[in-house]
Amino acid sequence: MLSIEIETEKTVTVNAWVVFVAFLRLGLTSFGGPIAHLGYFRDEFVTRRGWFSEHSYADLVALCQFLPGPASSQVGMAIGLTRAGFAGALAAWIGFTVPSALLLTLFAQGLASWGDAVPAGLLHGLKVVAVAVVAQAVWGMARNLCTDTARVSIAAVAACAALLWPTTWGQVGVIAAAAVLGLFLFKPVPGGSHEPLPISIRRRTAVMLLGLFFALLLGLPVLAQIWPNQALAMIDTFYRAGSLVFGGGHVVLPLLQAEVVPNGWVSNQTFLAGYGAAQAVPGPLFTFAAFLGTATNTAPNGWLGGLMCLVAIFVPSFLLVAGVLPFWEQLRRQLRTRAALAAINAAVVGLLLAAFYNPVWTNAVQAPSDFGLALIAFVALMFWKLPPWLVVLSSGIAGWLLSLVL
Image 1 (tube, one colour):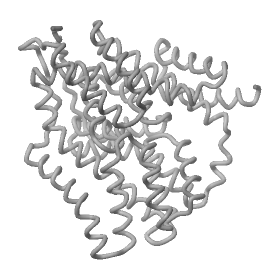
Image 2: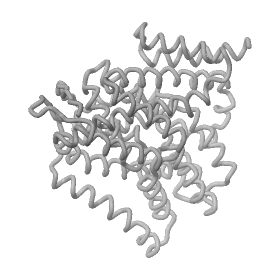
Image 3: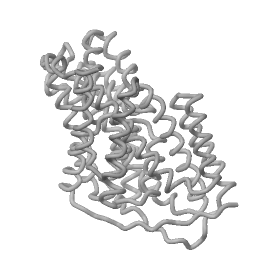
């Protein structure tokens, strides 16, 4: 069996304000969807700030792939939680979520002309830069997590499986199969150094948070039946959406459409307009809940309705991340878990590689000029070491200029 070297990481503790500022910048510049978000996070918190080792970051990504809800937002919450406790998790969520939630709320308030004023070439340039961001993440993680033939093979098979079965359960099955395979292929070296993530949550508190998650999941529908009112029905709908959906924002959108359109809360035309706007803003797609809560035909709506639905759809992620992370930290110390994680991390690289092809590459690269722009953005990130926000902004402008001349 193959041995595993255990990497030592430095423990970095910061205050919630530092976490907020870091995630606010990401919330303003992180275009491209959840896979691209994970690339932005890796560049910021592994490469630039050194808050995590490559392996610890991959462990967090693997955990959040198993949890229902928005994986990239949950990784962000976990980063904030490990660095500054509950205040850090809240700061990470606010910083990463507020920009897109605010834009979608304003759009729902009747500023639809803003969407028409944004050039199509600019939006396409932002899609193209996501190719470079994801390529950088795949390249960097592969160098650190696929260090031998066995791990490279696991990553390749995982990528092929994800492309052949492009469903959420297909991805979960790939990760589960890799975990079982890792138990037989890898043998961790006993006594290797391992510095744990700084989790300050007690296990008793974690159990209470998990209990609250299930209590709300089971109790809100009952309360909505006993005391029928619009506010409680909306909270129930969006909480269930955040609790039961695997695969992130693109998966939750059809579920929300089936809930809010037949009930007459918003028209199908309004829903589709908001869906289009959600693709054009940075940050998590789950902020689409703010648009729907604002645009609903019955009170509460407006700013209050948007805030209520936004909080309701993200509360399950807070409860799950804070409830599971303390147990995850204990598990990742064990030798058998480390063996499984070695294979899981390689499989995660494969899943990212599959996502790099579809939907990132297939949606963005449609002409030779798109490939050229993506290549320049990749070089700017990897070799020129330019900050991601500058590369994103420049690629958007370049996409607009190219649309004028081509």
